[in-house]
Amino acid sequence: MEAMEPASDVVDPNNAGNPLEEDKNRHDGEERCRVIIRLKPLEKGEKEGRLRVEGEKIFVPGVNGTPSRRRKTDDDDGSAFQYDQVFPTNSTQEDVFLSVLQNSISYVLEGFNATVLAYGQTGAGKTYNMFGPPGESLDDQDLRGLVPRALDEIFDRIDKDKSGSSFEVKLSMVEIYLEELIDLLKPNCNQKLRLRESVYQGVWVEGLSHFSVPTSRAALELVLGGMDNRTVGATNMNDASSRSHCIVSLRVERAMPDGVVQCGVLHFADLAGMERVDRTGAQGQTLEEAKRINLSLSALGNCICALSDPHRTHVPFRDAKLTFLLKNSLGGNAKTTLLVACSSRLKDADETVTALRFGARARAVRNVVKVNQKLCAQELQRLLDKLQQEHRALQQYCLALEQQIEDTISKDASSTPAASAPSGAGNASAGVQ
Ligand code: ADP
Ligand code: MG
Image (cartoon, rainbow, N blue to C red; front, side, top):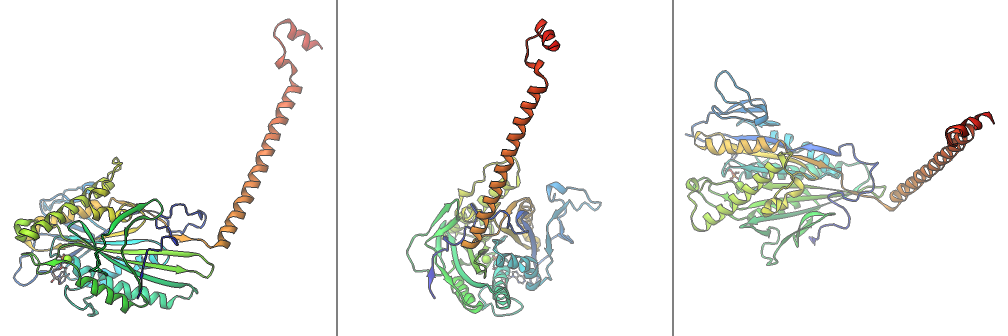
């Protein structure tokens, strides 16, 4: 399998400069970030917290929910935190996949970008939702998470495609550990990875390897290898706590029979959890990691705050590698879903409310999505011909208007000669003539 550089010459991820205004896909436009909550079931002997789920709302006694929807309830349950969907503790991995990704995968195959962010307290189930039970092979059909299911679904749809298109899927996997970027698919490579940004390409990781994957199985093997390379460590809150943010990206390029090339990128961001060091017992290196994780998650919170406030013009994306890397997914060109993994335990009540608040605020973030596509020479020629035709028609219209103005002026001049003559006696004499 060969490592490949991003196909930046083929597709413009921001769609900047795309000349095909008239062919804008019907899904183009502004979209709100979807926020989905998944509550983790209790383990034996754990005491349940005082959350109450009602449809897409979560009530926490004595705590104010989504600010814009504040309302009192009779039983002093505070007010509701409102989401797009709430998965209670008995929901399955399949339920979450259908809600989070079923549509996004169609969009990605049509050339849109989509992002899923897993956010939440350490041990609340982010990695479980994204990949499956930590440390497992991801082969268990029931327990496997979003990434293996998405891989199967993408390749299944490619196999069933009848449009005559050819597809290429490329995979990359990057970790942000102690504010350094690490290529998880080339772990021993000492090359320092840097974030770069351009108007045309948006933000990308320079030097990151992209592997072309022919099948779902090949892609999953790579992902499993990448996960083994992730930095994890045991804390009091989680035996295999992720000490880094990890982003898996699938780039799906589709070359259609008419020569149009579309490219959709699907990102999965499994974020490290916000940690209260007094509870995780972090010391030494683990404490240093916790500080960096918390700083980058604070930066993410600040970006979400700025993006959800219509009066703020500056969004501090560059405050952390995480936010800079996710720039395109936060207020940019991507259909973004935030999956908040929440603990339902009583002793996690404070962290759960923090995560619920974060999720409720993120619902105000709006992205502007566009299909990423490059046109073939014939399509560009057709567009040019059409624009030239329109240009000629407008020129003719201008000439006709100019002619009309000239005609009107000369007609006015000949029918009212007195209008330009001097006033008084002269006027009277002109009238007699
Ligand atoms: P995080 O990534 O948020 O730190 P993990 O995904 O590692 O948390 O989950 C911590 C533990 O909880 C793991 O043993 C995982 O299998 C378990 N777990 C998480 N969510 C669920 C769930 N919805 N159902 C069953 N077990 C879960
Ligand atoms: Mg994790």
